[in-house]
Image (cartoon, rainbow, N blue to C red; front, side):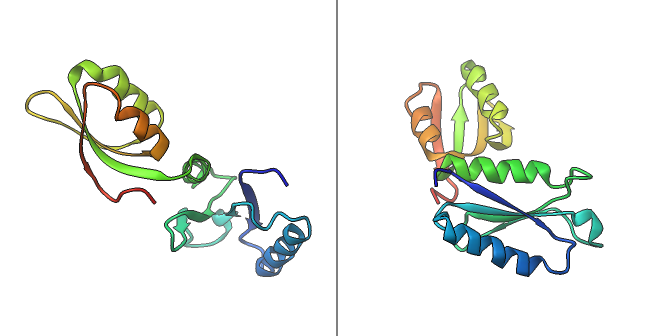
Length: 156
């Protein structure tokens, strides 16, 4: 099977969803797709009192389950971020010091949703906490006007 990621959408409000999960996993095994990365998407949380959108990660820190409501839109942004992360490969958490002359790069980092936090230093530089694919970070390291201040958690 040629797929980079399988989204397994599950009716979280259905009493028999554990049984349905086993059935899908059995079919995936039969067609040789058990090794394809999978993200479980538990939908219909709007029908579960007290259930909030949530992203759950496995022991390696990778997303493996997202709780959403397609009806209300709750958790959809989290789902998109999880899909992006899984498709992007290894992620890197960095603290970047970006020169004011590199405002275009700053804008691109925001547009790609890599920026988690920003401060402006006394000398006008942007201090950005970013989470991005390691491959993209390697490209940014080559640019002038950007100083790597530190690694928060490193690559996963």
